[in-house]
Length: 538
Ligand code: HEM
Image 1 (cartoon, helix red, strand yellow):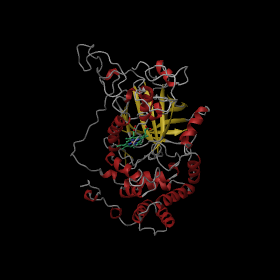
Image 2 (tube, protein in one colour):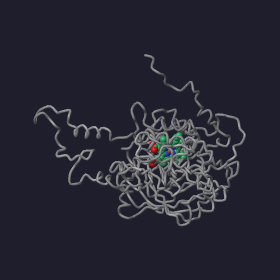
Image 3 (cartoon, protein in one colour):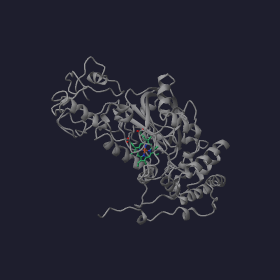
Image 4 (tube, helix red, strand yellow):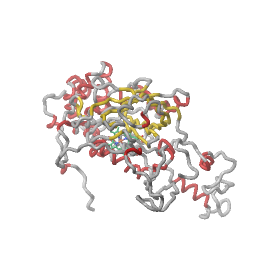
């Protein structure tokens, strides 16, 4: 829509190309007027005062002053690459999405990230990693915004601000910058025992990947696929790296973090530049779409649960290859805007309450981060399919819209012939029956088992992996100042496994707690009236 910007794939076109390279024969100001000197301010004599009339000085400094945009409120530090997704066609029976048809090739942009650290933090910290993929399909953009762990800390998005407040640096000292090793984090994840599973994954080797190229990815939530005949299937998405899953050991992570804080970012860019293109297979676990939305007793709407692959094998549906580095970090990696609500016909959501909050949050945060409502026009975010919307004006509007009637029906601009129904390839929400219910603020009973799955994960670990987990809990909890939080964490571990608890207790120099003490006594829900803070009165 803009006359001289970049193509959706990030290639410069027209005048933008000239703007991209300051190596041209002559330098100009932003208006295209040729400059003869950019090193000296305009002054009243060589030692005299600088003149306000120096337009070039003011423009140059003004623009520099506004170079930074807010970093993402989470996942601020990331690295990304372009690539292609080739569909095997094996999902075509369960989804009508055009990009899942046999042989379909779709351009993609993938951004990997840490969660808690700031943009300038270190790559090899213990943390969850983001794995977000933008598919530029012929039917619109589909974003699969996942992580490198299959489960999440919380079951309901209303707690997301709380877990992030607990995990981000302390408000007083801004410690720690990027590690899950402080009192508020451990306070939260032991008071909200639904977090026990994700915390255990974080304390495992999965928390310190060897390389972005060697990480699995997970869509986490259960999604609903819709076939051409209208039948539906519940699925969980998985990315499986062709290089296998590998982690650093803690000492390697520490040394790499010190010697090269850009370890993962460099590894990804260097590999792609050298032609060693990383590949992942996309796979799905499929479950019958029953009204209960459970599988083998597992509630598919609870994002703290996974479905073991022994019960539902991952079926490969396509291959992702990353084959091109971004040419400009800010334009692409920083300005890309992923959103779980970017869906295409054939892929629908479920009633997972964590997903529901995300459907609001991404679009909302991007209005601030990308300064206004028009960020879908930024080249990296532009769909590769035609856009014909009725959205108009606003900050950073790049399109010059034609016509006079951005509403429908209208009798002036051809009436907007869209919205003709299902046969046009429109996105139609699956008509899922909502059971008769009473309005409540509460979780279902099926969300209350917080320990079977972490226990299963722990028991599936090898001896070496267990030693790493014990060392990680001991180290991270050892950083807590509050004794009561360490004790509560041990009580949580006692509910996962007695040996894990005993070994961490030994490392912390504390007695192992009695596993029979009910957790409700250890982790009571604080009354809202106890939540601290008040407005200053002076
Ligand atoms: C960013 C994953 C839960 C809010 C991200 C990113 C990923 C991600 C990968 C980085 C995207 C990028 O590279 O630009 C997940 C997963 C979740 C989850 C897998 C759970 C299954 C939530 C929830 C909320 C939330 C519950 C809010 C209620 C955000 C926000 C951003 C973000 C605000 C920053 C987006 C931006 O500035 O563009 N998330 N997230 N996330 N997430 Fe989540």
